[in-house]
Amino acid sequence: MKITVLGCGALGQIWMTTLARQGHEVQGWLRVPQPYCSANVIDPQGNISNRTFIANDPLFLAESQLLLVTLKAPQVSPAVKNLESVLPENCPVLLLHNGMGTLEELKGLTQPLLRGVTTHAAMRDGTVIKHIASGITHIGPGNRKSAAYSDLADILHHALPDVAWHDNIRAACWRKLAVNCIINPLSVEYECQNGALRAYPEQIAQLCEEISWVMEREGQNVASESLQDIIFDVIESTAANTSSMLQDIRAQRLTEIDYISGFLLRRARTHGLVLTENTRLYDIVKRKESHYDRERISAGLPGT
Ligand code: KPL
Image: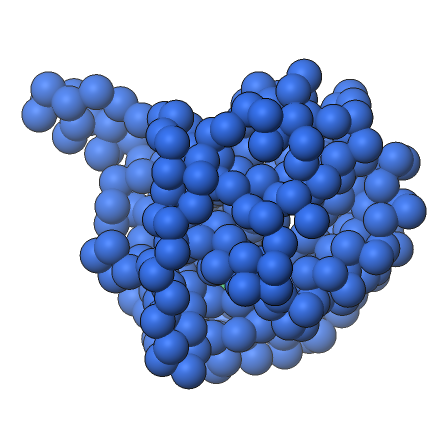
């Protein structure tokens, strides 16, 4: 298959390497156009892959059979809309990011749109991407044109297992959203690795309760206690991780907060719900983002 990977960060490089290993033709697509991009990945078993891929080739894009989007949520819609007119009409676009809200932003897209969430853990260490832990990628239809693309799950599964198809991907997205609404901003508040969040069971219980109110109104019935079990499982299985949001704050990058807690709070508002603790965490992260804007301005540097 001819596959363009939009966004060549940690997850993008892992997918490029594993798809190429399965014999797929792969190109990268970078925001600042370049003829080549490299992927330098250490897999969970310690094996090193170092490969160079072609990048930003419009002819390759026009013949692509899959656009795999591994950008962070705030960058997804503008980048996909930018490629829409060159991409074949029947080329599925698969979005893999934390948070929700991009499907709504890409409502009128010509191409079949698919949504995925993943539990693979990766981080950048200098120029190397460390694929810390294998996980599961859940994918499913994001618009009416994409229901017929369930075969993609098998193709992707051969490259980077496990991949599972869900006719109702929204349920998996909401569960991952709940995890990210809690672990990501809490790790920013306490500046800690995920495992240290075990120390805050009461705060986590309140966050779960508020999230379960919204999920119920969204047709995603889940008891607050079951959500707590899910959260504590993820805290244990990712105990040594630095959450992606804390990594972003430390690197003074825009976080995904508006698509994580921000999305939750927007849905809560439409149901007339007030989420005190989730709002407090949202404000903490937004305040930190606005501080580094100020630091950049006072240092005379351009914004992101
Ligand atoms: O998805 C994550 C993230 O950091 O964005 C979790 C599950 C919290 C793992 O760190």
